[in-house]
Length: 518
Image 1 (cartoon, rainbow, N blue to C red):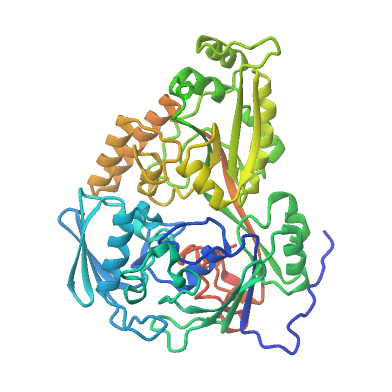
Image 2: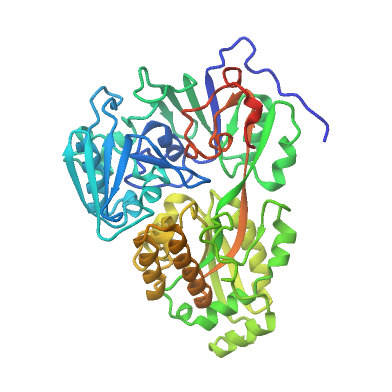
């Protein structure tokens, strides 16, 4: 590709503003209360709020945030956190154990979004102003990773939320956090402006301002990167087909990362037909993974998969727990046996498949699957939903037939429990398997990783044999960043959370900037 040059947008301007483009609009900023995946507010919340700990996105380390250290007690059934006594809210009020207790107790009591990452917590006890205990209903060796994986467990200010209705609290839109940046201005459909907090109690941020530009047109966002007016785009703006637009451009770095989950088909288990394993296996055997990879794959980075867990979770990965293989004749036999014979037009059933609009790659998978399913008499439509509609239609109302979805599965499979256990808060399919539930309990009840890994390998075998879900795709996360800045999660080997930019700073201020992983 011919080398291009970026325009020098910052000629004569200070290099203290980091500009990000994202397709999702502003919704609100309180992810502890409710989640709108991929929204601009969700992205910003990672920089406005703090949580007790943060977990690596690639490895299995857990790092301090509000808690500067912690103890694992009573065989991993009690966790004691020691809070940083210097932590402050952005309005100057000290942050204490009372804020932590209130935030997480209220989320658990009301079943808010954060509760799905607080699974198993039965008591939260304040020991003193800066010490707090979490007591679990059973030992959970994956609790720290569960607690620190996403911003959904962030802490909110008790003095601004107590005795209010969270749904109407004005601080959902005018947040007061304890993170390195505070909200200066939010204009729906246009931008969010964040400014560095003076005398921040943690490591000082490396830029004075972050501007998050809302750009639903992904191609337009990439043109803004080429112009130099945007320094970084969030996940799913750059996709495999658009990589050539920015690859090889001087001053830009294309970032490829192994995905943190497996995209899979979920069945709506409130429908009787999907209670029949033959129907599930019939659908699974209609999937031609070689064709999926040929049409949509990126050799060495993304492609179809028939296993339930990412291979990067080596300590728990089971290579033998595979989905049923492609076999059109067997697919038809199974559907016939289940009483789904084709009608006069050759149609066995009509299905509606949904995916989140923020993940356009899932739409591409759905399109190819619809073509493949037609060969066994299944007529399927594929529709994208925004995150708010997904919560209402899919998560709450179970108004779907099939879904394509993925999610965080690394570095510890415990984070998947709320999605696949019976009654899990993120279990939108309503899947229920007593053996799967037992194996989750067994896996988190022991500390030794070797033993935990064996339980998880058995769990994968059970889901595969049950055809509880159908794994489809091991994806790649694509992004593009300007060389003018350094400090993204991908450049720090996942040691800071996705979308947290407290370590971003002008590259001139970073020693050995060429050593980053990309």
